[in-house]
Length: 478
Image 1 (cartoon, rainbow, N blue to C red):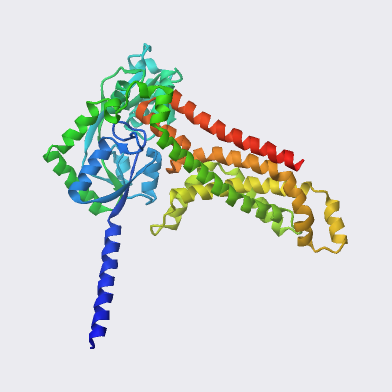
Image 2 (image 1 turned 90 degrees about the vertical axis):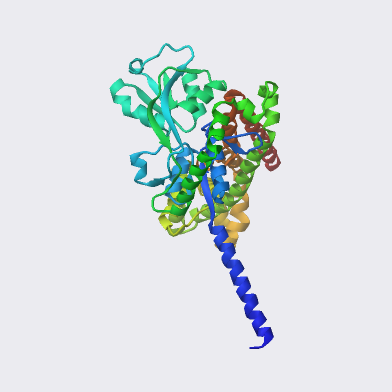
């Protein structure tokens, strides 16, 4: 073999080896989901980074065992669903190891043991479970507190109300809508230490273990490394330092906040970057989705007024399906249900799933008013155009569409506003838009009123600007 041929073979072998190593390295990058509102185990700190016992334990284990991972912060319920649907490789979110969950997931060795406590408003006279009869109890979905409360519900005769995040649960008790809440002791204790106006009135019950979870029968190597790393950080004292760091500290000492940063202006200044990021995500989703929805809506509108039965039937069916389906259900189906149906590790990025969800939902609404706009043009216009010898599609393009679109333009602006507000629902699939940004900030500092006021003002400013645009367009048309 000639020298140049040998060189080519060696080069190809080297390139092949590089691709093989690169693919192998990529295969070792795991996506780990965590909760967003479960301080001190996980919460978003200043600057958008996540902190907490779970986060630091995962980081320490990853360092020991050379695990490459990316963190995905979503609600606990969404994290569990995504793990079931193979959208993530593991979950670390203060997840209790239970017999029921073991049917679906494989768990690591326990990394924390906690008990459940009952908390009530500071001025409440409730001290015993027996005093809850006929009253409402607030619970966070999927927690040990929720499971324990459900197990004693029939015995003590109370009603149950579920929430997706801790802060809303606490506030429901604080304002008197619920008589009490059940929560893991370290989480409840941390919240009270950082300003939640509740008090713990029970001892710890139903002690349970927290574990790192993977889908049953999958990622055994990751689970093995987690257990080995956990054993190592317990042996060298790292684990104890992490736990003490969070359970013996206040939120202010962990994030560097001061009293002045708790004012409305201080909170806004401190979280400006995080809020700006959420606002940009909201606007990006809105603009892209409304463009796609407009295209889909125009197609559905044109199909709806076509002669014959097939076009109108297709248009009516699509509009009926996607306009009638709740946006949250549609988002879950596209992001979790559809990939699970396809299988083979198929995944849809959260942003793409959110965009498709809004496109289908808003496109159906747009299609309905586009169809109505075309039908609002007098039938005589089409008849006159056809009698002058214009083909159907030319008559539609030159005569009907210009008049119909003129009628629809205010509705297009209104649909833009609706789409902007609908983006807030997409937080359920892990998209950190403006509303979810508020939830994450509140999970850290418990300043619900001030943060939600900020978010409301931002939405109102944007919607006011869009309303002015709508009025200006309408004046120009008139």
